[in-house]
Image 1 (tube, each protein chain N blue to C red):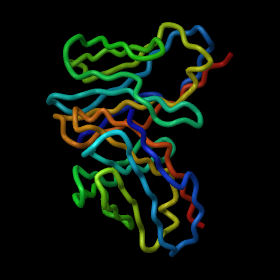
Image 2 (image 1 turned 45 degrees about the vertical axis):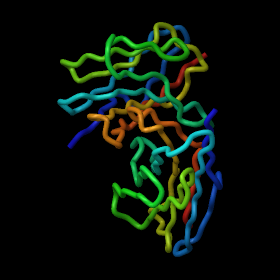
Image 3 (image 1 turned 90 degrees about the vertical axis):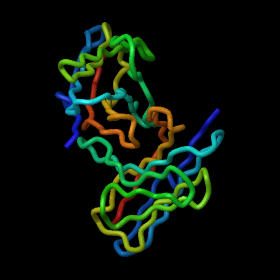
Image 4 (image 1 turned 180 degrees about the horizontal axis):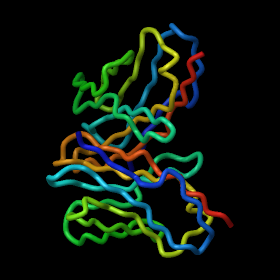
Length: 113
Length: 112
Protein backbone atom coordinates (compact mmCIF):
# COMPACT_ATOMS: atom_id res chain seq x y z
CA UNK A 1 0.00 0.00 0.00
CA UNK A 2 1.13 3.54 -0.70
CA UNK A 3 2.30 5.38 2.39
CA UNK A 4 4.04 8.54 3.52
CA UNK A 5 6.41 8.57 6.49
CA UNK A 6 7.36 11.62 8.47
CA UNK A 7 10.23 10.63 10.67
CA UNK A 8 9.72 12.95 13.61
CA UNK A 9 6.40 13.49 15.30
CA UNK A 10 7.71 16.27 17.54
CA UNK A 11 10.61 18.63 16.98
CA UNK A 12 11.72 21.35 19.37
CA UNK A 13 14.23 23.96 18.23
CA UNK A 14 15.51 27.31 19.36
CA UNK A 15 15.07 30.39 17.22
CA UNK A 16 17.69 30.75 14.48
CA UNK A 17 18.35 27.01 14.40
CA UNK A 18 18.24 25.22 11.07
CA UNK A 19 15.34 22.92 10.33
CA UNK A 20 14.98 19.76 8.30
CA UNK A 21 11.83 17.64 8.44
CA UNK A 22 11.96 14.30 6.73
CA UNK A 23 9.34 12.86 4.40
CA UNK A 24 9.58 9.55 2.56
CA UNK A 25 6.97 7.90 0.41
CA UNK A 26 6.45 4.44 -0.98
CA UNK A 27 5.40 4.69 -4.62
CA UNK A 28 7.51 3.97 -7.65
CA UNK A 29 5.70 6.00 -10.28
CA UNK A 30 5.20 9.67 -10.99
CA UNK A 31 4.22 11.72 -7.97
CA UNK A 32 3.21 15.23 -7.09
CA UNK A 33 4.52 16.29 -3.68
CA UNK A 34 3.27 18.79 -1.15
CA UNK A 35 4.05 20.24 2.23
CA UNK A 36 1.17 21.76 4.16
CA UNK A 37 1.34 23.72 7.40
CA UNK A 38 -1.24 24.22 10.12
CA UNK A 39 -0.50 27.13 12.43
CA UNK A 40 -2.26 27.07 15.81
CA UNK A 41 -5.93 27.86 15.32
CA UNK A 42 -5.63 28.29 11.56
CA UNK A 43 -6.55 26.39 8.40
CA UNK A 44 -4.28 23.87 6.78
CA UNK A 45 -2.47 25.79 4.07
CA UNK A 46 -0.10 24.91 1.28
CA UNK A 47 3.54 25.61 2.06
CA UNK A 48 5.10 24.39 -1.17
CA UNK A 49 4.66 21.87 -3.94
CA UNK A 50 6.63 19.90 -6.49
CA UNK A 51 5.21 18.71 -9.80
CA UNK A 52 8.22 18.50 -12.11
CA UNK A 53 11.43 20.29 -13.09
CA UNK A 54 13.94 21.66 -10.59
CA UNK A 55 13.89 19.28 -7.62
CA UNK A 56 14.62 22.13 -5.22
CA UNK A 57 11.43 24.06 -4.68
CA UNK A 58 10.89 27.19 -2.67
CA UNK A 59 7.76 28.01 -0.76
CA UNK A 60 6.39 30.69 1.46
CA UNK A 61 8.13 32.10 4.54
CA UNK A 62 11.62 30.98 3.52
CA UNK A 63 10.88 27.26 3.38
CA UNK A 64 12.28 25.00 0.70
CA UNK A 65 12.11 21.29 -0.07
CA UNK A 66 14.22 18.96 -2.14
CA UNK A 67 12.84 16.06 -4.12
CA UNK A 68 15.31 13.18 -4.30
CA UNK A 69 13.73 10.59 -6.55
CA UNK A 70 16.27 7.86 -5.81
CA UNK A 71 15.53 8.15 -2.10
CA UNK A 72 11.76 8.64 -2.47
CA UNK A 73 12.18 11.69 -0.26
CA UNK A 74 10.88 15.24 -0.12
CA UNK A 75 12.48 16.84 2.92
CA UNK A 76 11.49 20.29 4.14
CA UNK A 77 14.17 22.76 5.17
CA UNK A 78 14.57 26.24 6.54
CA UNK A 79 18.00 27.73 7.33
CA UNK A 80 16.88 29.79 10.33
CA UNK A 81 13.57 29.23 12.09
CA UNK A 82 11.50 31.82 13.89
CA UNK A 83 9.11 31.52 16.79
CA UNK A 84 6.26 32.07 14.32
CA UNK A 85 7.15 28.81 12.57
CA UNK A 86 5.62 26.90 15.45
CA UNK A 87 3.03 24.75 13.73
CA UNK A 88 2.23 21.25 12.54
CA UNK A 89 3.71 20.27 9.18
CA UNK A 90 2.26 17.63 6.89
CA UNK A 91 3.82 15.98 3.88
CA UNK A 92 1.41 14.70 1.21
CA UNK A 93 1.90 12.73 -1.97
CA UNK A 94 -0.37 12.47 -5.00
CA UNK A 95 0.49 9.34 -6.97
CA UNK A 96 -0.04 9.59 -10.73
CA UNK A 97 -2.46 12.52 -10.48
CA UNK A 98 -5.32 10.46 -9.12
CA UNK A 99 -7.81 11.94 -6.69
CA UNK A 100 -6.12 10.87 -3.51
CA UNK A 101 -3.53 12.64 -1.48
CA UNK A 102 -1.63 10.27 0.75
CA UNK A 103 -0.75 12.05 3.98
CA UNK A 104 2.01 11.70 6.49
CA UNK A 105 1.14 11.69 10.19
CA UNK A 106 2.48 15.21 10.66
CA UNK A 107 5.33 16.77 12.62
CA UNK A 108 4.65 19.20 15.43
CA UNK A 109 7.34 21.85 15.45
CA UNK A 110 7.86 24.01 18.51
CA UNK A 111 10.24 26.93 18.34
CA UNK A 112 11.50 28.24 21.65
CA UNK A 113 11.93 32.01 21.70
CA UNK B 1 -10.85 34.70 -5.08
CA UNK B 2 -12.00 31.35 -3.85
CA UNK B 3 -13.15 30.69 -0.31
CA UNK B 4 -14.36 27.61 1.49
CA UNK B 5 -16.76 27.60 4.40
CA UNK B 6 -17.60 24.93 6.91
CA UNK B 7 -20.18 24.92 9.64
CA UNK B 8 -20.66 24.50 12.40
CA UNK B 9 -17.21 25.17 13.82
CA UNK B 10 -17.88 22.99 16.85
CA UNK B 11 -20.58 20.49 17.62
CA UNK B 12 -21.41 18.33 20.61
CA UNK B 13 -23.89 15.57 19.91
CA UNK B 14 -25.13 12.55 21.91
CA UNK B 15 -24.55 9.01 20.73
CA UNK B 16 -27.29 7.89 18.37
CA UNK B 17 -28.18 11.36 17.15
CA UNK B 18 -27.99 12.38 13.48
CA UNK B 19 -25.26 14.53 11.98
CA UNK B 20 -25.08 17.04 9.18
CA UNK B 21 -21.93 19.02 8.43
CA UNK B 22 -21.93 21.43 5.54
CA UNK B 23 -19.20 22.72 3.29
CA UNK B 24 -19.54 25.30 0.55
CA UNK B 25 -17.03 26.73 -1.87
CA UNK B 26 -17.23 30.15 -3.48
CA UNK B 27 -15.43 31.62 -6.45
CA UNK B 28 -14.96 28.49 -8.52
CA UNK B 29 -17.08 26.05 -10.47
CA UNK B 30 -17.06 22.27 -10.74
CA UNK B 31 -14.47 21.76 -7.99
CA UNK B 32 -13.45 18.37 -6.69
CA UNK B 33 -14.60 18.19 -3.08
CA UNK B 34 -13.23 16.16 -0.21
CA UNK B 35 -14.11 15.24 3.36
CA UNK B 36 -11.26 14.31 5.68
CA UNK B 37 -10.99 13.38 9.32
CA UNK B 38 -7.90 14.58 11.14
CA UNK B 39 -6.78 12.64 14.19
CA UNK B 40 -3.91 13.77 16.39
CA UNK B 41 -0.67 12.10 15.37
CA UNK B 42 -2.26 10.28 12.46
CA UNK B 43 -2.47 12.82 9.68
CA UNK B 44 -5.53 13.17 7.48
CA UNK B 45 -7.81 10.30 6.56
CA UNK B 46 -9.79 10.76 3.36
CA UNK B 47 -13.44 9.86 3.95
CA UNK B 48 -15.22 10.88 0.73
CA UNK B 49 -14.53 12.73 -2.45
CA UNK B 50 -16.72 14.03 -5.24
CA UNK B 51 -15.89 15.04 -8.79
CA UNK B 52 -19.38 16.34 -9.60
CA UNK B 53 -22.97 16.73 -8.45
CA UNK B 54 -24.32 13.46 -7.14
CA UNK B 55 -20.99 11.67 -7.61
CA UNK B 56 -19.57 10.41 -4.33
CA UNK B 57 -16.68 8.03 -3.76
CA UNK B 58 -16.17 6.51 -0.34
CA UNK B 59 -12.71 5.66 0.84
CA UNK B 60 -13.47 4.26 4.26
CA UNK B 61 -16.54 2.11 5.06
CA UNK B 62 -18.10 3.51 8.20
CA UNK B 63 -21.04 5.15 9.85
CA UNK B 64 -20.88 8.27 7.69
CA UNK B 65 -22.21 9.26 4.28
CA UNK B 66 -21.75 12.23 1.98
CA UNK B 67 -23.84 14.03 -0.57
CA UNK B 68 -23.31 16.76 -3.13
CA UNK B 69 -26.67 18.32 -3.91
CA UNK B 70 -25.18 21.35 -5.65
CA UNK B 71 -21.97 22.04 -7.53
CA UNK B 72 -20.27 23.81 -4.65
CA UNK B 73 -21.95 22.17 -1.68
CA UNK B 74 -20.75 19.04 0.09
CA UNK B 75 -22.50 17.52 3.08
CA UNK B 76 -21.29 14.94 5.55
CA UNK B 77 -24.01 13.03 7.36
CA UNK B 78 -24.76 10.26 9.76
CA UNK B 79 -28.06 8.73 10.81
CA UNK B 80 -26.75 7.61 14.20
CA UNK B 81 -23.50 8.89 15.64
CA UNK B 82 -21.06 6.63 17.44
CA UNK B 83 -18.53 7.66 20.07
CA UNK B 84 -15.80 6.80 17.56
CA UNK B 85 -17.12 9.48 15.19
CA UNK B 86 -15.64 12.18 17.42
CA UNK B 87 -12.89 14.09 15.67
CA UNK B 88 -11.93 17.04 13.55
CA UNK B 89 -13.54 17.07 10.12
CA UNK B 90 -12.06 19.01 7.25
CA UNK B 91 -13.53 19.86 3.90
CA UNK B 92 -11.24 20.62 0.97
CA UNK B 93 -11.50 21.45 -2.69
CA UNK B 94 -9.30 21.50 -5.73
CA UNK B 95 -9.70 22.57 -9.31
CA UNK B 96 -8.76 19.15 -10.61
CA UNK B 97 -5.27 20.24 -11.49
CA UNK B 98 -2.73 18.02 -9.81
CA UNK B 99 -4.63 17.97 -6.54
CA UNK B 100 -3.43 21.21 -4.98
CA UNK B 101 -6.07 21.17 -2.30
CA UNK B 102 -7.45 24.05 -0.25
CA UNK B 103 -8.93 23.46 3.16
CA UNK B 104 -11.76 24.85 5.20
CA UNK B 105 -11.50 25.76 8.88
CA UNK B 106 -12.85 22.42 10.05
CA UNK B 107 -15.54 21.20 12.44
CA UNK B 108 -14.68 19.80 15.86
CA UNK B 109 -17.24 17.07 16.58
CA UNK B 110 -17.58 15.59 20.05
CA UNK B 111 -19.94 12.68 20.49
CA UNK B 112 -20.95 12.17 24.11
